[in-house]
Figure 1 (spheres, one colour):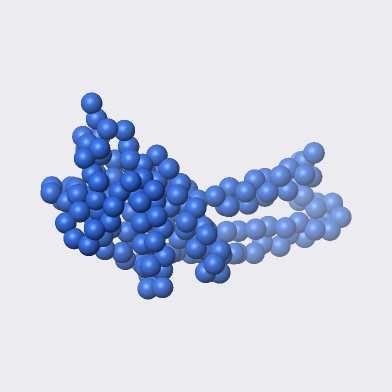
Figure 2: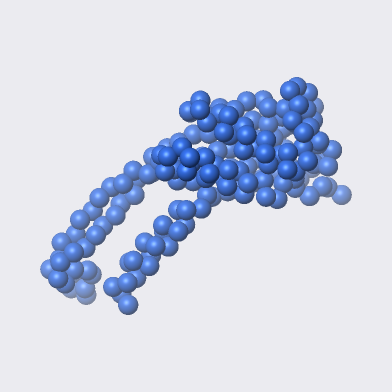
Length: 173
């Protein structure tokens, strides 16, 4: 049983890494029923090729929720910010006869530890009330990146869909 525990934990960690971490928050005093149109304020991402991808993903979700994009003067203003960072992960593998943890210490096996650098992307989408300029909604998604644009674009679309799953928040009153 103890032999397989490490493998099970590794598989669980890998499974968790397959799904984006998405968090949202909103102003509880905002009446989301009054917002019908939006205009883009800014899209700021590290790679200019991703500006259109982020814009399309957010536009698709807002359109599905009944919001209409206008060039200027929308009821709400939308801004998106994306960044990547590298996360270090240590992996230790035990091999040889008798490897593993025993009551008296390590067995006769060898241990090899490697450091993996995993790219992690974060996208934050903010929605502001255009008349007051106050933030009324924020969504944040973080996910590991594959380095393959087609795969990462699919992850972006899934993360943004998850971000807007419960949008708009319930109206006050």
